[in-house]
Length: 289
Length: 254
Ligand SMILES: Nc1ncnc2c1ncn2[C@@H]1O[C@H](COP(=O)(O)OP(=O)(O)OP(=O)(O)O)[C@@H](O)[C@H]1O
Ligand SMILES: [Mg+2]
Image 1 (cartoon, rainbow over the protein chains, first blue to last red):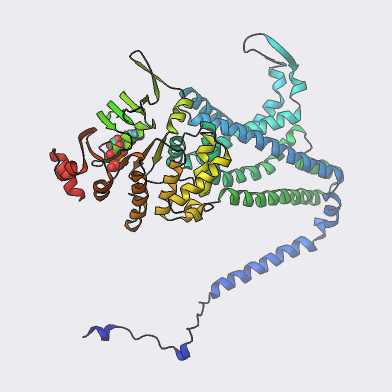
Image 2 (image 1 turned 60 degrees about the vertical axis):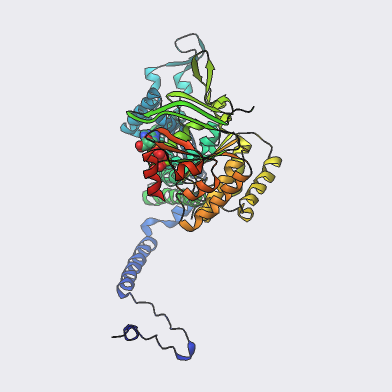
């Protein structure tokens, strides 16, 4: 047998036209899509046609001043808790990675403690701090005091809520930031050090921006979790979104409609955050394929 | 000053129980190109890293251009310098890594200007044109605004060399600059290094490229088990080594 006989003949092309590509069909995929479509239609219909949802009541309360104010408070709690939480979390992460054993141990202990105690318990604890320490003072540790406050005046329900949420968040943020810092290739630190960059510059210009690629998706989860998580502060009678709709439906009995109002607002907030996350990720992803 | 650019005396370094450098003595004159050869694990990278204080020595001294590196001598004691001082010393020594280690989130231009701006605090008006000149010198003037990931390995390493040069260092250290490259890209990087050598830059190059050593090195040093066992002109060390270990190694690499 000669080599020539083994070769397959070249496909014949009529009038030099390239062969047409026919995509394979997936009948099961189509069937699945059809079933899902029908189910979706049923859900929508059930939502729209059942008068018990009282869409007109939803519309009426969606932009009611008290509801809008409660949304703003929810936002405020989220922003403060995330801002303070991640600031403290970053410090904790750096402490944890420090070669100093004491700093590292303290950071580990913090994360251990604040991840172990349920948030709701911490909130009540801060709220009731005045019972333990009726007065707080600012001064030299174990030395003279300069200012002195009644704990009640200093830690109102809002401060207690922000404090509780932020301290709790810091424990999770610390782990997220630490994971991000560890994900950056060691060679990057070496190169930055070899170039003589000052330590702060190494961290903020070289390491953190690269760590952000891992930090942002996890932080996004945390922030969205916290938007909804702020609803636990209703136990401190703070008029955030969830507390506010409860107040209203306890008055007028329109439970379902008002729960829908809250749901719509939570959806709006988390959607806005998801969109923001997309852009932040794109920013920190630059230079990567 | 007419002393040597680099002077190592009795340098020892251990990682835990592993005694990696066992009393290294080495001298590199100004303008000299020293090629450092040696089997894997003999301590070549560690030695280079002690020269810019990325690794502290346990014993012995490292001097660059007559100045003790990372320490201040008072009587017979060495006091470690504050970090700021060590960083300033490092800006006088360029380091090129095997894995390039470019900053992936910065453009090529930003990679070059970062250290002159923030470590040397030079004005941007001076640093930007310098970056342009250096990129032209390594043949990458058109890549200033590209991100490192979009470049080939050879191009990335040339950027890394330009980045080291942007500090206008007295001394350049190369740790296997072509080992991570595809064979067809090795030449372009070696050409840049040869060009620097001709320009009179003092450098220490760790490499397995014997041809390069023969062509460019003023001196070849051979390291084995944490010591420099042989040191001399390329013709002597490469073709007529004194030590059996050197002979065996060169036989293997060639
Ligand atoms: N940071 C470190 N911690 C512990 N051991 C280390 C460290 N750096 C290097 N070593 C060890 O020191 C020895 C010498 O390493 P070094 O990288 O200097 O060798 P090398 O001559 O550069 O080898 P190669 O040709 O493989 O690069 C090796 O056994 C290595 O595992
Ligand atoms: Mg090495």
